[in-house]
Length: 127
Image: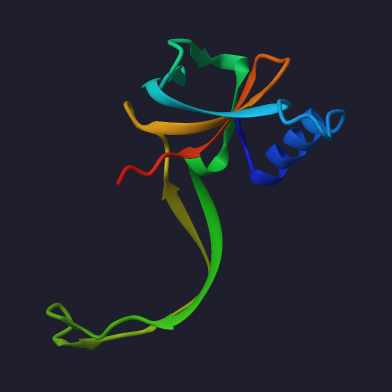
């Protein structure tokens, strides 16, 4: 199931609310995507995290956003109409963001201590 950043922030806040001064309330771990369906993440300690133990944020899934645009298309020549063509491009448009995880990608997870739950936060950018 995918969650947005506000949901995850609430979950992390809940996980740490009783341990305000406890730095061990959450930990950050890095893993590798080893399966897509079902999603499985291999941690450095050789544990595979999947299923209900994994809370997936939206930014590592494919999803749509609605955006408002207002501009003109570039001028192009239409061979069918034998004339130049350009027009206004305006209004609310839906865009698909294809950001789902791929095999072997490295990811960052936040582990909730005392629970078998990991928030899959984002990808690791390799340089």
